[in-house]
Length: 110
Image (cartoon, rainbow, N blue to C red; front, top):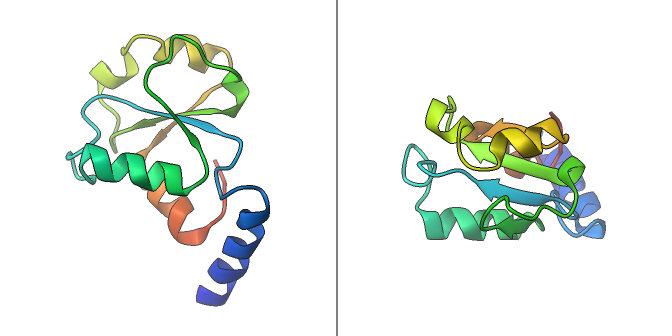
């Protein structure tokens, strides 16, 4: 409900946003493919409180890393440099639909 979303949003503010403390990498081909433009997608991710990663070469904490793919993800996205490595270390591979649901509900669930 809208009341729950509002309450969740207030709770999320205390942790720096619904994705506060997380790092997010957006795979190639996500922006503009049934998703906002690259610039808009970056602003959306930053508004969640997450740190936006430009690549996956150095990931501070794979267990607090999310890789965003298209919905459904493409094989080329899953084969991008570093994706399989960080997934093996505990990163979450999630589609854009998960990101937008997380933003709308202000709750983190996988």
